Image (cartoon, rainbow, N blue to C red; front, side, top):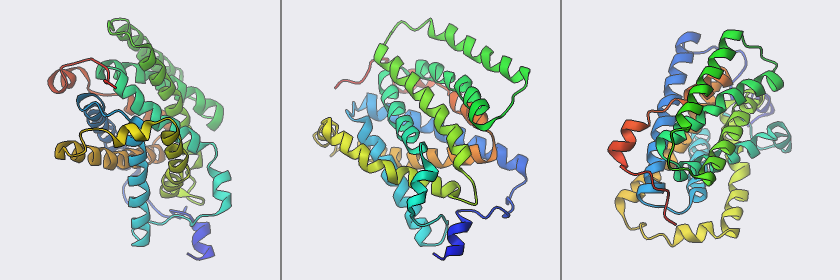
Length: 293
């Protein structure tokens, strides 16, 4: 890649959007909402129905899928992002920390809580995102939007109060996930300058910088050993769903960046908090029991 390419980043600033802005905003939001919904279902099946013991290894698989897909796409000139440079670490920080925190806490909370309760508690991402956008990005929202956000939170409190299967560990993980998701969304919006890394560069280097530390953490905690000793690796259906989760992990990360690129981080947070939990949990899982380790 030439020096000119390096400065150009992933997408030249002058490159027009192939779709009208309103259409791009709508389609990117629908794409993100669909990916967000599907990956919760697949991960819930892996971590609960199959009792896969390692959310961290599942997260590593999703990071690896992201790195491979983006790198192969770059080699084949389908996409472009800058080659590695030491300055990239400075440009991205602290986004990789929020990225991996969001990834692991999300998978862990999915395994500990029922799907409807997970959906309810994820709505707390919305006010956190609004607050961080105001502080970090300097955005100002109207009173109507602020009131609407607090109405959503009030509804979440009411719904959470009816949860009889209290799980403190699950609540801690999901609230950490809310914090990491809000910070990840706002900083992604901030770092996604087309003149610098662009959408694909942010995705690729986030996953690249954090996959090794996450793998080391998985080994040191015995998490990787639990995953390798899991007794379902000869089950074809389990393997298909594991690989599907890895691919959906890439799609989710890409759709998140795409939605934040065309919309605000707050819009992305609102869409991510909207899940269809109750009916599908009854149909697919018929259980609120946590993972058996």
